[in-house]
Image 1 (cartoon, rainbow, N blue to C red):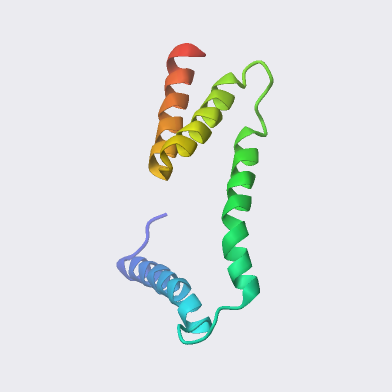
Image 2: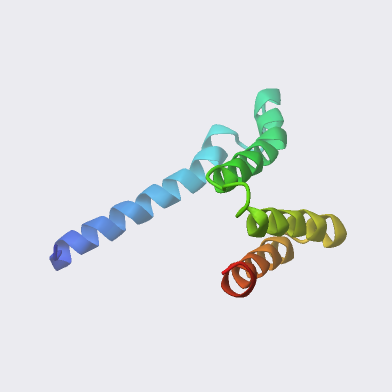
Length: 108
């Protein structure tokens, strides 16, 4: 499907407008001069861990027992790297690189 110039402009403009709106919405709903409600602060504290847990389960849900070694090794390395260096980029990057090396060269 080929889009015309006008259709492309409308699509990019609507995506940009939606992005700006979703970025500005929290500042409109919770202005700086008012205290943030307790349940919003609670969600901000617990949701990141819950989402990461859900992502881990989603990523390893279809892993079969004998062939799940690369995934389990990589998950363990991510946890260890993060506990050691406290760097999200290093943890995720290191785990990803290790996983790719394991499935390309070790567990063929």
